[in-house]
Length: 153
Image (cartoon, rainbow, N blue to C red; front, side, top):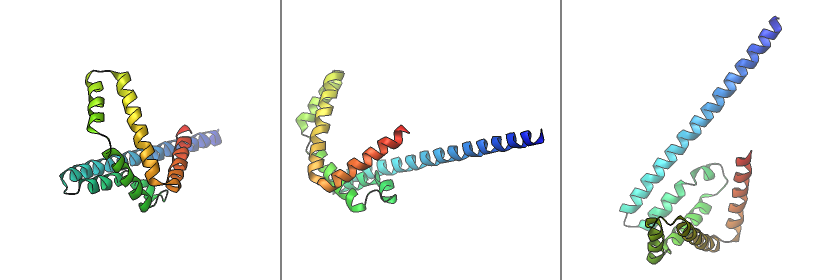
């Protein structure tokens, strides 16, 4: 009888501590996410006021990849290249394309809006792929696949 109570107590304690550890990890992850989000927002605001807006946008973009650099999944050079290419691709979106997208949004034409969005994203993605080169593109593809596999678990 005492062994059953002791075993039940140990299981209850381990479950409690396991849940507490998981909750602490979740809270820690949420706090890290919120801190990065705030840093990114501040970087965007700084970029908008800068005399080098493009450079500021590249710096803001690199904030999103701090964890990847810290975990050594990407180097800072990889991130700088990716962000430079991303900002360049965003800068190549024409005013006419922006107007077309905004017009579809204003008309509440969800289908057209999504088609335009996909088209622009594909155009930007192709531009970024070409800009970053094969090695970094393959590295990013591998990291994406790993993240998707981890998310399924």
